[in-house]
Length: 566
Image (tube, rainbow, N blue to C red; front, top):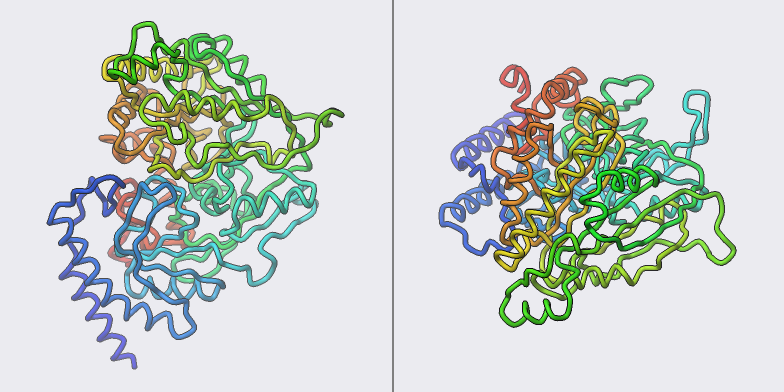
């Protein structure tokens, strides 16, 4: 039997080395939706990957064994249809033992593995073509329920909840409300997995609260040797700073314990203010953002177009000089925490933006969709009350074509000079393109604000400092179809403009189309990248890079002593 296994492994090595073709750095085995022209060498490369995978599939099935889970070869398409990966090994384990069998099989065959959830990420954090995609959404805990509440104790004088990594946000919210609890950070979507939000440190736009990663106090994971390991802030404080935003490189997260709060009631207000009053008024911008628990600013360009300007544009695509970006309205959504609900209001459930599946204008096309988007937002009540977990606006997947977003993060200074400069830069870029070309580089501009934390890879990071630093960061998010003219050029110009001010990408948003972005990441995170690598190695979680893909390898490099250990 051992001889048979050795023979199969040798066959695998021969097939792998004979068929492996060097990847194109630009595509990284991913095609942007809307790119309908594929060169013949890319087709040949993908076909060669598939042929190799057919041989590897037999080995994976052999090492996983008859108890499963089943391994399929599938195509992957992400949430907003902007990332397509032609061929992946796909597994969907339901138990810890199935996870361990897959990880062990991956280690034996040398096939890298990445955990996946709802597919909401818009950046290349997914497996490369030919790697294993482990869908964790049906995973169940072997020693407890999917969500388990823990009362305060001497070690942790606060409530905590342990959740399996594949729990969806709306499931957790329902559990929290039922038990009189709240989270301070929430996403714009309710079907993201907890594991996905923690891995990329996403979601959370509260002035006095960090993203989801900031609430992680304990984690269990399956390491590269198939062992279930437990780590906590109390016993492993340094390692937890790496685990709380690990980009999927620290094994397969099994369950996560998070700190939660008691019941919190939120008053939500929707207002529509002139862009000039926020984007060109430093004092007002600072006062608005710092005086609320949460401030969400949404700008849909060209939304103030009047009937005459609209008629001219529809006729000959000309933008009259009478229109100016300063005249546009900004949707200002704020949240403050209150002790009680007034008698003339009731606590409402989650709010779904009435967009028909598109955050930027429904069925309207071109720059006129800005006006349509604002009209959709105006359907929301001016004031409403919610439990905090239900107070954040929620969007649905786009139905009208594909939309993607690029997002970058900057430190906020105490005077709010940097936010103002960033807002003005983008406003002027948009105005110039609208007036010169009759098109906009983006459909929506969505800045958010958050508290920094002690975390090696989090983009809201206490270790990334600037002069007069407030200890908070802002995410500058702009949304458009991936083929929209000016979208990537404007994003690249924005990065270049603020490169000397420690700009960094939002890990889960589209950013790899920006020239030199890997160098930007290395410049900003500096020694944190090597410290992360060292902790991953010293902890024994993954000495050989089993959970890496090509993009992450480009940033973090190969593990130390790779040829010795692997």
